[in-house]
Structures are given as C-alpha cells and as structure tokens.
Length: 231
Image (cartoon, rainbow, N blue to C red; front, side, top):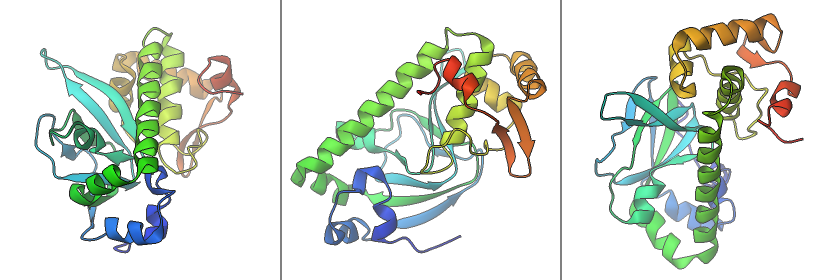
C-alpha cells in the first residue's frame, strides 16, 4: 500500500480541485489511509459516522436492505468519489445507506471537522459539493430509468458503470472489475440466470471481450444505440 497522500493527489478529487494548497494541507491534517478488502462493509445505514472517505482505488456499492431482506443497489462509487458527505450535509452524522466494497479498495479518511469548517467558509467549495450531489441524483435517476429497459440494456448499463468507476478518466472501455455474475445480477436488478444468459450473448456478439486485464466492452456503438452514453 502507498502510504503517501499529498495535496496534489487531493486536488485530483473534483470536490477539492479549486482549493488553494494551504487549505488542502489543512484538510489533510490527521488524515488516514485504509486498505479495505472486497466484500467488507465500510458503512452501515443508520450508524454514526465521524469522517469523509475518498476512494483512491477500487469500487463500492451503495445499497439498502428491504423489509423482506432483499438488496437494492442505488449507486456505484469508484475512483475519485467520496463516501459520507450526505451525513455531513444533513448535519446529523447518521449514515443514509450501507456501503460495501465490491473489490479491494484503498481509501483516504478526512476529519469532518476540517471539511465542515471549510464548507462554511468557502462558497465555491459548497457549490462544487452541491454540483457533485446533483450529478449523483442524475445517476440515480438513470439507474431507476434502466429498471424499465430490456435485460441487455440493463446489463450493458451496469457493465459500463462498473468500467467507468475504475479510474478518474471514467472510460466505459476500461477493464470491468472482477466481480461475480451474482453480484452483477444484484446491481442490475435481474435474476442471475438472466444475467448469465445476457453476458454469454454479448460475448457471442463480441460486444464483450475477455482480456488479460479483465472483461471489457469492445465498442461504444451498442451503448450509444441504447442511450447509455452520449455522442
């Protein structure tokens, strides 16, 4: 694990990109770097939280457990994103959902007190945070829109989202994290058998390819035709 994390790397996170170096250094005071194994639950819904987590590597899912014990995945979080800002905004320090690592992860923990002080003192910082939350709401809307689409569109949308989550570049052609078909089915909201069938069909049509780095989407046209990406 790389135990170094400086202000330049902090600026790579969109929330902090416009902040001046002295302020970045203050935000890093008493920060910690944690390695999280796959399947570890980082945040429990309803728990009290005392920090803001920045994702340096890896992918996590944000989920709710229904009264019947089912799992509903409401978001995927990857490189360059953060966990815990909603509790900070609401001011109650209560986590609003579970967050579970889909892959091994490296995260940076910042103290809320330092972040909150700067949120109050820097209007541009607050505006950037609001914009990030707005984008998350749009992504949530897209996720629920996909629930009404055919199985192939839903699986492709999930695979593209997983690929984008692996780097700051958010490239849907990046390698897809190595997770089980059962996990892909849960994220997509489909039965495992249906998901397995769709994955086989996509491989048969060379829309999906297996590479030494992992499974990849081979071309963007199928995503464009289904309205999953622009252009």
